[in-house]
Figure 1 (spheres, rainbow, N blue to C red):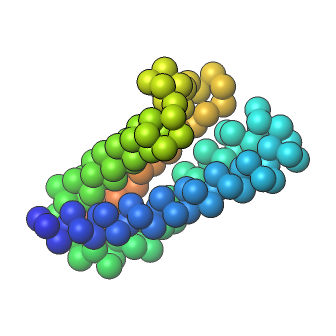
Figure 2: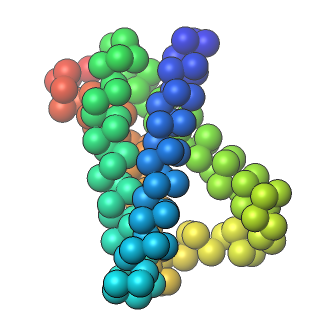
Length: 134
């Protein structure tokens, strides 16, 4: 179990690095070229694709074979992401709780909920595609 958690943390760190780079790309390029209303959902779709790709290539290195392990990896990735989002947002950026909840508002074009779904389900979906019936 501790190996699974350690490998999931490594996977999450890799995803987090690409998420930060995606955010920089959004703010420095997408927003200036197309405005926030297009840049925000485009960034969410881009990040979702990046996450699925990272999971696809990292999954074989995890050495998992049971469906429950892939599901647990997805749950842990979502947990780590939410913890980071709220702790970083509150303690580092200084956002209050209502500001932190704005990432869940899809009316503004924020696709963070989609990103969470991709993070949560991609380990199981990728394993199902790669390895067949689990």
